Length: 538
Image (cartoon, rainbow, N blue to C red):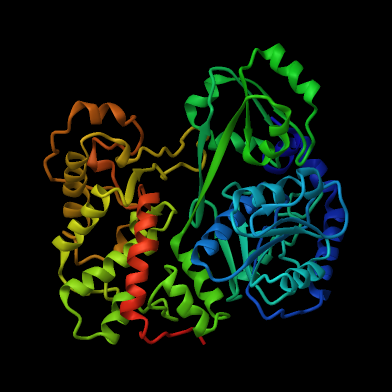
């Protein structure tokens, strides 16, 4: 086990004694960090700025979180996006444009590994690195940026929306460096709870990570240079560990030596290098065979909606009308209490059943986009917290079936009920569109999920059903053995509906569904409802 991981998270007696002895230095560090934050100049740049930060030193998921919301906002098409980072450990100085509108302009050495990964992972956005964040924001605005995403911007007193990521693993001591791993006063967790423009996001509650391996080989050398590499094993699928011949964990942001890697591959007889996406950007030019740990971050849909509402405050109605034609939400409500159906019916009280179902189809596809979404967070047709907006249950279910059988949406099972102490449990993503006999698959899923779980329990609020396993009394349908052989045995079992729950079933829009939404459904809605009244947050 790494010395620093043990020291910060699982210290022995001597490490605890060392931590206590270093407390005077930690107090000084904490005071300096607090003063720097409080004495920083207040500034309002007049555009939406979203900062992603943390209180501990490294390993909380800032980079994948930034990538996720950058792609999310890019899909919303609210305006040009620029990600600003310091570019830690880069081989350059001053302000450097890593990419502009998706075109990469420099190599990983000049940008730093994390900004380069962001630029590589996000289409149609810009990325720049600069130690002086104020100067960087001004330059980004001059270049046409309309939304700023700030990497690690917690200590700056800009007018912004702050997200503070809190990892699931808690440090042993609530001390600042060097006695603990905090780089800001841990009491800030409580301070930020009272700030309406600051959200503390807890891992495995507000966001979690799903890892899949591409180019897996029988023998892999695990090579990485990330913060807190011990946590990496928690995200590896259990069967992968048997194929790892050796583990090499370097210091965060370290460079790699080709000759050293070559000797390691020879001595371990590894057939590929297993590494992270962050390390891939520094290894890909060496020519080695790489097995990549692809990290897909899931963020609670309520967080994404909060981001939308924040950004929409800065968007003018004329711009919003243009966004509608490109697939943005037709009806924008300032209050989270206002359901889209409520707003639609208030604007069109004489709407027919068919028109309401069309709105629901639009709402489902617009809500899913290209992100995996928990079924517990789908916008089902609830008028408010106590009653359904209408009783078109069968039509709603058939709409889901039609979208699935047309290949517009996909459904998968993911075991999210991981124990806090488990390092072996890992989500998996078997998708229903990958199975044969689609009609039988849909009927089986419909009978055990929709009919029994959701619409047969109208008296309950959707939120009350979260994380509850089904107690299904519906007889299990007979499924062809070809289907059963495709589903692996996990804690969430496709063949056992009693293990299903709303937090373990996910849906997303496919590429075919995206084409239908953007080219057919959204333009038609724009023409039909472009005169709808828009309501904005004050």
